[in-house]
Image 1: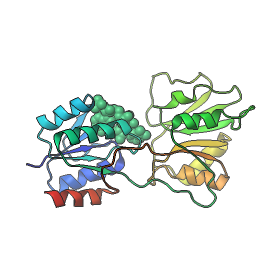
Image 2: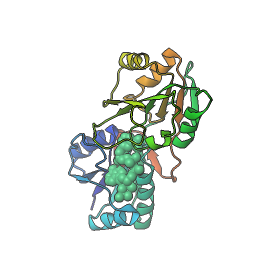
Image 3: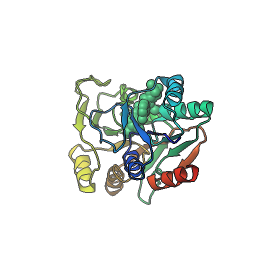
Image 4: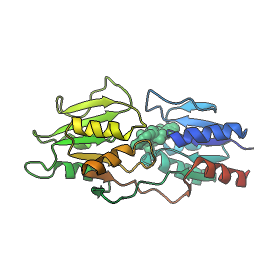
Length: 252
Ligand code: NAP
């Protein structure tokens, strides 16, 4: 019997949930529950972690899951590793759906780094610091890497949800913007100018919704510290919801 587990959290996962529903494929959509605002998928939904590899394995067995599609964000490495391990243990086919990363264009000034710690080292480099107004376009989860901040430095942070939770950065050292993409080029250019941003830290998320800041940086000749995607175990892969549907059809 077919029962697909769709690990979501991205816009493409949401698109795929609609395709699965329209095709009448029995499936459940899983959210981490990390954000307060989420799109309601056209599928039955569950919210919250499974409890590591063992918890996921138990879920797969208990719910008779026949296929898993990992459509989490390219930087949601833990969930993807867990899905790989649990599917291997259960003998369930796994497909990773991941949009392509952005690639360097003429005029881009990227400083490519392997992870957020390395990005923070570049931000902290120089005395006086090389960068003074740094746009941390990385969400809130990895902000702690930037806690050691020179007194001359200020951050501009952008997060998806308003929160009362304290951020792991010194008070008064940052300006918080709450906004959810997609973002337009002219708005990103205005933001960079308003805050005199001289450096952006970004994950190489790929996709159009958050690309405008990269275009704005190119236009204003601002360096971008670009964090590469985490290295994950080898899995079957596709890049779009349509390709994921084709993969599934071949197996049903
Ligand atoms: P992560 O570090 O890989 O995951 C941490 C834990 O959250 C996982 O071990 C799992 O808990 C739970 N989890 C993650 N995705 C889940 C899902 N779809 N369904 C059920 N549990 C899930 O992931 P993250 O970076 O915190 O991201 C959390 C969610 O936000 C992901 O679903 C991702 O697609 C979305 N997101 C992430 C980013 C980003 O930049 N990281 C950006 C946009 C959206 P258990 O171990 O208990 O199962």
